[in-house]
Length: 360
Ligand code: COI
Image (cartoon, rainbow, N blue to C red):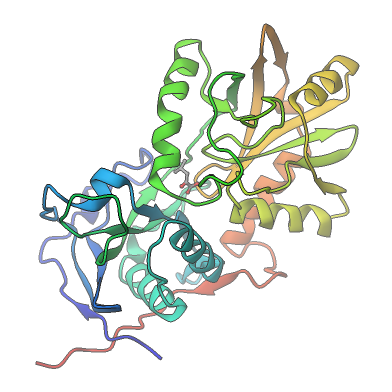
């Protein structure tokens, strides 16, 4: 079933102002956004309109009690000019898992997919073709009831906007491990892609920046030693030939790039183990000289190498230029996304116009 999407196109596109060779991450928006509203138990008013400010009541529940969830996806182009979506159905599944945890309504998969397809198809001329660049797609859902009181909203908005982006981390990153601050605890909302998880990370990340580190590497909230994730990406360690990534345990975001990279590695013959890994084990491996690579994975980050980690008063230094597995994963994902190599997992889908013309 396809939902009717009305399209109101802008009369003034800003595409001609875009310098495709110099795109800052997250600052340039395409012309249009998709909107749908939830009221009386159903999604309705599916529409694409020019990107604009949206008036919001001061009592909006999302602002006060944080019912806001989102996804991050990317679209690329192949040599024939098709706009390609990467595993869009996985993002629909994860959005609904986040919605469930945050007491928000399910968005049926066909509504999600029709929206992403139609918007990305409309904006396909914005997709950068430069290596490592893409069209970043941001689906989001938030509460819209105007009322004060800690309870789930009855009304919601789902929207999608797009941004042409260059690399999130143009160079290898440095990470700080804190035994004091935590991102998430089992039973909490760490697995949901909800705004509050990112808000909670801002202050510790600022302290990390002040010490010269790009981000925090989070460890668990009970023993303060089990590695979780970076907040902007999931994390992988290559120790003595084996690739290890923390098993998702309820407090770690179930990254779609994480899952894809695991499949790519295994398909290529690497051993990948998903299990609890402590920061002490990482340090010990470093001291023994068997910590070969550390890298993160995420939609925005793609694969980003880690060259420095500070744990307590010790610093782990790695030479990212010597990493082999991370480069293999990054090249494979980047080339697969533009169909330069075979899409053997069938992850790519051509974005198509799924709007139904609305007659007056
Ligand atoms: C993504 O990887 O898409 C995210 O949402 C994380 C953020 C660093 C942009």
